[in-house]
Image (cartoon, rainbow, N blue to C red; front, side):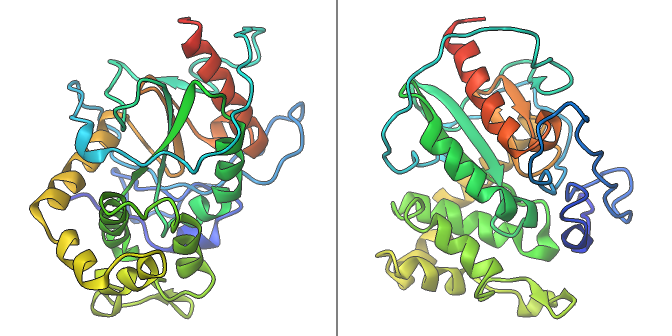
Length: 287
């Protein structure tokens, strides 16, 4: 069983990525280096949670972790691929070798956010992710892959809740509301004062069902589906896919199962949006 980092990542939100350090989980995350002086000024890069680093050599089945497409929006025009040396592999983004399956079954280029509603960095990055959804061209689609590697902060429950909502067709509509339920109303928060709630007091699937009920989900059906074999399988495959992608922190963006990067590696929030679109154009050009 992997050891997990504590909630101290919340206190370091503007400085470091919340991470699951497999070598020494008792240490707090290290401060995030400031972006290079030549980079445009941007909001601080999000804290992240480092996940198991060992990548699987076999691409896990994608069907049971398929994320719903983002809400329909006017597609941005596709831009031609131009490699002017701004984005450097191994520095700003990282190749996933071997390439892995997509999260969804789409024929389009897929941009996946690895996230958790319980991750303070993901909450901070959420408006930027919404911006990216609006700016992707018509040949690209967004998917979401929920992480579970911070059990003391209730990530496994939130992962299961998302996958259940996805199966019931209400995940997209409730995306903003779930972040709000953790970080604004705190009805789904794992926090208690300056610390964490004991495991026995953490919000449950039934609590999450109340949020999704506002978007049409039946609470009893939600709880039943959440504990079904189908969702257990999706949970397992989501965790496998996260490892296959070599995800080390949340939020992480993955393009077409081939490239992985974070806002920190990109240099900031705005740069993350720019890099995602550049990788989409790179993939479209077959480069």
